[in-house]
Image (spheres, one colour):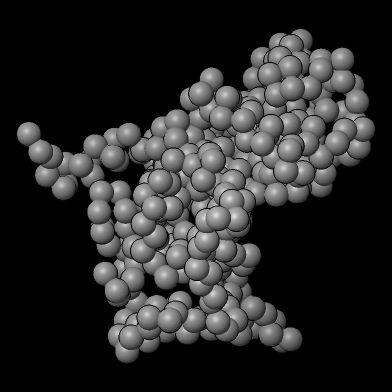
Length: 332
């Protein structure tokens, strides 16, 4: 028997670990006299579900709000509005003391493995620190777990007492991953985790992330500007432009049938190693508008080759185009 649409949505919600709805983040602009003269609209009404043991990729050019989205979900920066439902609780409405218990289950791996590790602490201490904060185990148990995580992420146990500067970029990122795993989370936000690494090291770290995802049953929010990297690891991809989610679809579907003109332009820029295969390059003209004063209607209409009159005044909403494939565009 075919499921009705609301039954399908109900099943998806039951299987989702994280439900993000209408997330917004505005940064105030202070005038010389201390008054707020405007806002930088970094994230505008972003919604998505993150499912158990699955990876959602967030892609878009620099400044589109994808990193701000990840940090807002974890409340590393406080969102301006919206909801983040985790285990039936809107974690954005909790006070910091109440939210503390959820911090253990939602961790982050940062882009720069050098600046995200305290240079004054040995790597063993860095991995044990989250366990100390959340009062997990005894001192000897924390040390044993830290060594085990180092081994699982490809760092020798005898390097436990070394400092971060004694490791390469790829090794430091592995240490960052081990630190995120220390408190046994269920959700990890990965903010450009391989962008600072050599290509050969990137593949090793991506393979490691896939291995530990299977082992620890983790859900990933994988943030990246590199579509070829996201294609390798993500089950589903959300495309962001100027703070808005403009398209979201299963990875294979998105690459085979991109709908939004912005997504089509992004995919056309991916280099193809085979010289015999040619792809028509779609060049987006103009500059990205300012998030302080974004265009009315569709935020992409100032650069879109298919813009219509209604695009200038009516903001498109995410609509289901096919199973699991949503797009915010008046063309559909």
